Figure 1: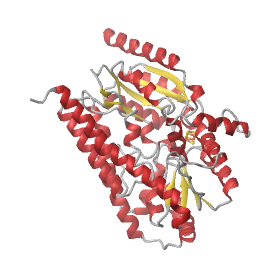
Figure 2 (figure 1 turned 60 degrees about the horizontal axis):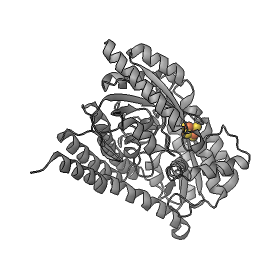
Figure 3 (figure 1 turned 90 degrees about the horizontal axis):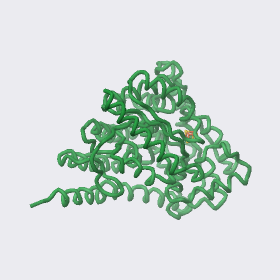
Figure 4 (figure 1 turned 135 degrees about the horizontal axis):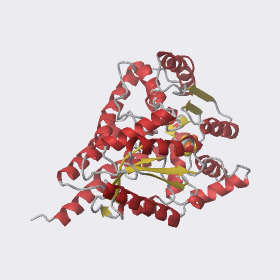
Length: 432
Ligand code: SF4
């Protein structure tokens, strides 16, 4: 007879053995490819997660390096603190985004990547600008360091709350007249639009499965944590793998694993095994803290709190309202993807999204994790909090941490705030 306990362990192992192992292999493979680029002659592009045009980069046989991902990986390995310190000693202010300072600290220390292999210098800095001004300044610093070519794709901000035909045409024009010719020149590879269509077809398959996974959080109990677990789930599609068969395979495996959890009536997998009883369902706005990710997550699952939707898992693409990369309209769909990233949306759109999540996922309220050094996310968060409270009647709370600066994670403060918040949710329930 299979007991519940053994079933739980089997599922946990399955999760570890399949999708997680697959993702680990993919990430390690990309770092090795990067490390070997000086020998293999592969050209290297540095680019950012929001608005990345990975499928296009792949058309030129280039290998992608994502500085934010290196920074967060360093944060998770507890190495970012020293890099930030070195960057501050070199004159970068305490208020500068800590992803930038971690990256610069890495550069000052030989640019050894998270897996211990040296990262190659870029052949091109590909700046797809989607809403965060820091991206511009970051690549100015790297251009000064590497003296390499830079190409910018300027993505207009959704100030009016929608994507217009003019905005789309403006982005497509830049792709045709600036970005593609530059990538052809750097790589020596001629652009083939059918190759791009093939990658986009692959992206759309993975996107379907990712959305399916994220929307399983509508179940009670939710079989996933859409913030702490979510940061792992979006890894492949937000980075060098969107458009690859590996990414499609990863999401196929993940989907099967989550389906198995639903069938077994289980909640999310946590670092300590299956989560216990689901008591609170939350929507979270803002990036997580990576230096203490497990400690932070534990404060939630120990109290039976699961995150059922988050804005952070939309920074590298908003797919759950219907957008998919479209092989029939390749350049237009790349434009729509960039225009639609969360960092490129205005505040009323972000509020609408959070309100929608609270209602759709039957959440108990909103929690904002405000990141000290990320102006792009933090601006307007208090206003968003009040507006979401007003429109949903659900309580909201505010905690403050940082992305990868260990000096700004105060476990006792965060825990106190969370506990008061859970009490507030209980009170609201009783009153209702
Ligand atoms: S300020 Fe925020 S959005 Fe901008 S690069 Fe830093 S972490 Fe990313």
